[in-house]
Length: 521
Ligand code: XMP
Image (cartoon, rainbow, N blue to C red; front, side, top):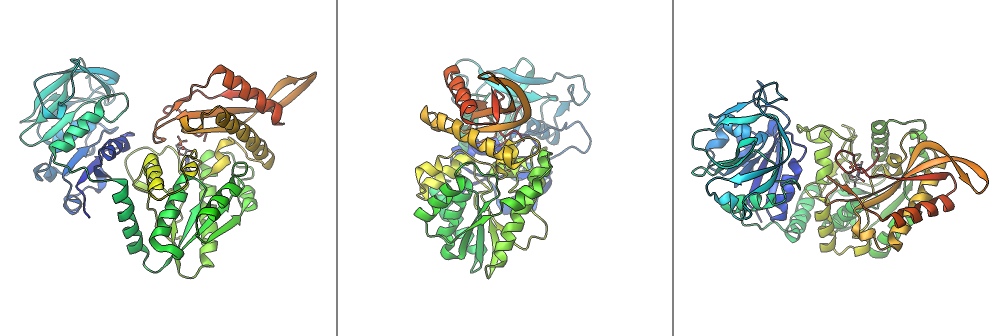
């Protein structure tokens, strides 16, 4: 089955993947490609029904800054340009862009909330401006100073006279703001109108995805064997069950206990798989290997890369014992691909090396099967439902591949891990007891590399400080801290300090993402 496809050309915005999300919510299949890889041959092969240009950090006024292939404008499909994408369109189609503060020109930069007012009527804006104006999110240094021939203005803001422009004959649309972000509350409507104008059928559903993914896995793997790293998280579990549906016994799962798991995690994961599935499963207890390698290491990226490399070594070791094992399956998700530029070669800045994307040796000997790499977390959960995984398992909070290593900032020791495990267990128990688990995207304790003075009974204590984190999120890309009640926080702090020797101080982390990240490292 083929679907209408939409091509997103990524010019390096940190929020490009949110464009993909908005489109997926509309059941439209889309692919993001970094601008460097977009050639007309590639476009013709993908045969998109429409194209979106993302935002980006560069300035079109800089020589050598990113562009789209010029011929794309004659390809005959609708194009929507966003922020930097708008400026690329104007520049390549004969308009003018002036530099703002960032690129050294004198123009007006604009960051944050703005209000756009309508000018004339445009189908892209159907359902907008019901209240006379719309709130949008601006984030630009440069601005368009002269429209390209054929374009007209359909919306303005105080600092962006060309906030919304279009050439309706060619179906080219260009907006200065970011309709994909939460701070443009009704931005999704613009994407909905755009795909409607472009004639999309909106036929990309999870059921369709599952069938196509199974067919693709069979084609890729043939009669070879696959080993799959199970972490106990939702992603690798869904990947394993999906691959098992596709190739049955050709799949062997390896559950690596790196000594960085949460309390009772190994038992829970192994139990879930053994009770529900008939998948060959190896339990690899490699905690000594990992903890010895991490000994004395405190740099977050060094820790991540070390763990990623050891995972691969362990998989390779097990693969060597399985005849014809040629593939390694991973539950890599789309945000992992996007956030680890080391993999995609895309233009955005690396934030963290997610271990299941970065850190793979060039000569691994195993080819990758990554059936979820186009999906966001909530889509993986929907796929998990479609595959019949137990709801309690699908609802588990995400747990990162590097495990407690990145929740123990600084050096890791077995003692610290043991303390952290207990504190985390009490915290999660509190959240469950108060019926809050489902409302929270992810909650965990982090053991800080700081000891503080306290007083318990008549004695002085000098123990670790522990930070509690809980966030709400849709896909882990952005997050808000969870607003626990003071009663909940003080009850939890008291329980942890009373029940967990080694901790005498609790803090609650109230940082959102951005500017923080969810994990501490
Ligand atoms: P950050 O800390 O980047 O995390 O805001 C976003 C989400 O990703 C999870 N995470 C990881 N998951 N391997 C994973 O499988 C990793 O290396 C990794 N690092 C972070 C994190 O728990 C959160 O859900």
